[in-house]
Image 1: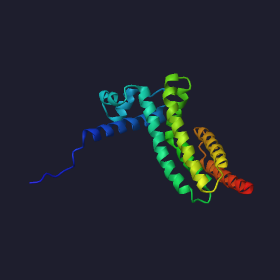
Image 2 (image 1 turned 120 degrees about the vertical axis):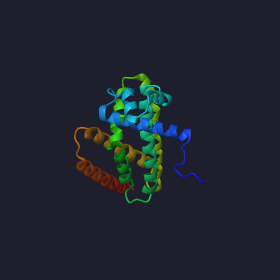
Image 3 (image 1 turned 90 degrees about the vertical axis):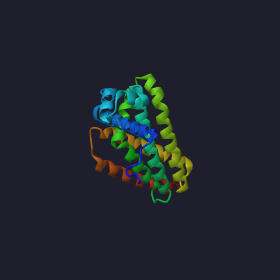
Image 4 (image 1 turned 90 degrees about the horizontal axis):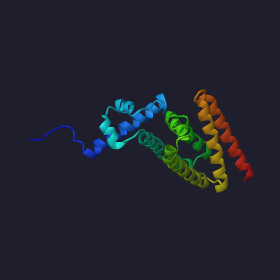
Length: 205
């Protein structure tokens, strides 16, 4: 006689699932309530775990917010690498980069991460742990997209400059978007920016 039913999960699988629930709860609360109003008790309640289970993975609030920020940007890196790969054959690879940046900075995880970054400005311990996460993300994305634009025909120095300009344009929009949600205007501006920059680069060539 055979036994039917779901395969029993391993301890490692259950632990990974619990960790994921805790991190997602942290991101959700950061977005909804902000860093100042986030507590470990709220995270425990939202994730549906005991305080002991949460402490096993993340003993303190700072551990929670740093890990949640790291996970948010890790997901963004995975998507960015895939988009950079396809952008190499695009007619306007800079527009593909702008779309990738907008998917990060115009989406709710950026607001959650921004809550942590603003707090870290006056919290040396938090900044010391957060800065490497942010530096790693921006360094890898800059390298990945510069390579993509170079393979699409850009000069390396030009690619570097265009990526920096476009990123900072989108960052400014993202902050403004917190209180002025006018996505149609932002998209139109990005479309125009990328077309004009592509024309400028072709003219220089």
